[in-house]
Length: 253
Image 1 (spheres, rainbow, N blue to C red):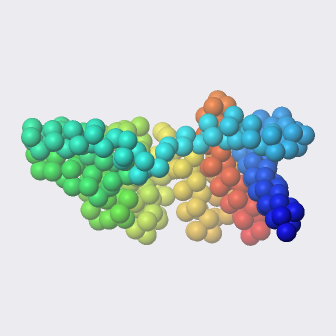
Image 2: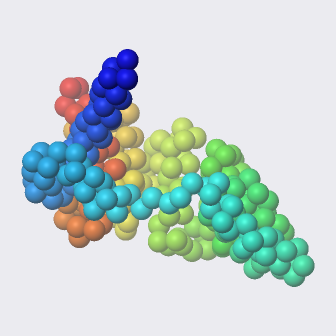
Image 3: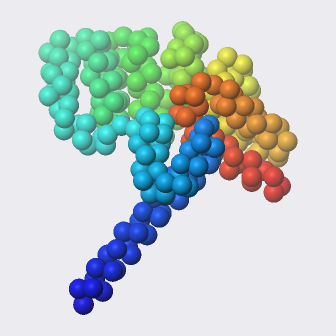
């Protein structure tokens, strides 16, 4: 009986190791710019190679953060201090600081309330407008977020190095204004050629039936990633995977 139990446990452990190894190998082949070297390491070293790859390549390329609930526990004191300062001092700056910490901890609804309180005092505060818009975009409250994004872009079109501009493009897409989203994206990409903006434009082109244009956009996106510094290219592995998946789908059309 114990022999059977031991063998079954060993079998499960071996299966888990094998699945983990396959996961790392596929991730390497799909997105790692140094895939040739690391694929050989994974193949010849098997599971130890997978562990090394996970620690040395996969984790650093993801910029992973701890779970939101854990950050809330460890930063509860800091959050409480910012909340107290906002209520006691009561100016827009303090509410913005509190709201930004709430955003960082994933508490978007509470953050939205803090930013809206700041806007009651300074209606043109860019940080408060952006923070409120972010919380509303997370909740898919497009009608509420739209005028805030437009107000920011009117004051400072380059605010947040294109993040606001892209958020507005994405909002237009989500609200079904795809022609406007396309026009805005084409202008946006001339200044900020980010993977997410190029992928969204490729998605719009595909939905419009412009398969060849979508394919060209994805190929340009992959070229941009591959020509970037290695550290940046590794962090864009997620977008490379999405682009390749769409290219395979477009090839069948």
